[in-house]
Image 1: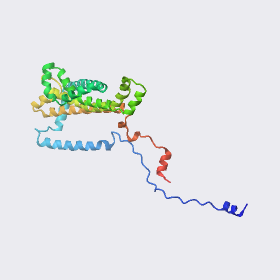
Image 2: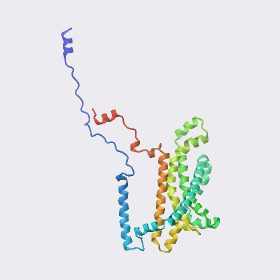
Image 3: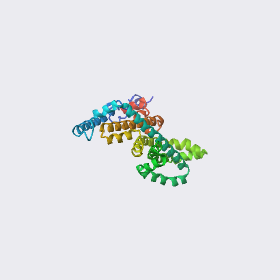
Image 4: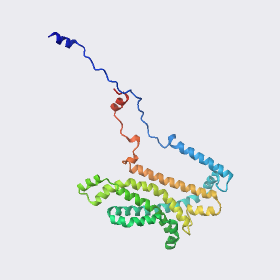
Length: 305
């Protein structure tokens, strides 16, 4: 072996100097989703409620003819629960029947309008006119036409809840991306298959968003119908009207509290249904639902070279 080769064999290997890398930062902490019982969820709302209650009590103590005491409202609810429950059920039945009729007709009409453009061009202006017409002005005519029973109240509630569902569903059915439609046409899908397997699933988030609006709004429609429809013998709207005429502010605000509770309950039910049905939609994805990174990726981020 030559001398040069021996020197090469025995010479220590020189490593290239390590390039300075980024300074290791602190390890990222994975945040957990906050539940409804977490203080950060309910504490701000509770703080605002306490402030409003304190302001209410201050005004009620100085001006009892403007606002009743909260204790009087609570005692009214406790002393006559059967009265409020019976009237609440009457109002709730009108709201549910009205929203079922109004939303059902609007959904069916939106399906037809999405498939037949001439129907859309013919009926959409009429739907806009119906939406901007004051429902209170229609109520006396509905009472004359349909009597003093349940029908005029249901019609008023249905009219109030009709337009939001029509607009949202029609928008959702037309929100399908063109490349996806092209794939279905390539597979020679029929119009019914495109509607059932593509358009309706794409329009489902829009439909449930409309229900989140119109379900509490149906309570408003039912109360308005009870206000303006003559011959109303039950319902929270009628109870508010008769109590206001007798200057019973505690009964008025007790009925308003029942209406608010009904609206919140209906909104919560629709929100729970939305989370259950639209678990696949991006609107329901949270930080907790993101795919977890691998152990190697976490080690690389915590200790970069």
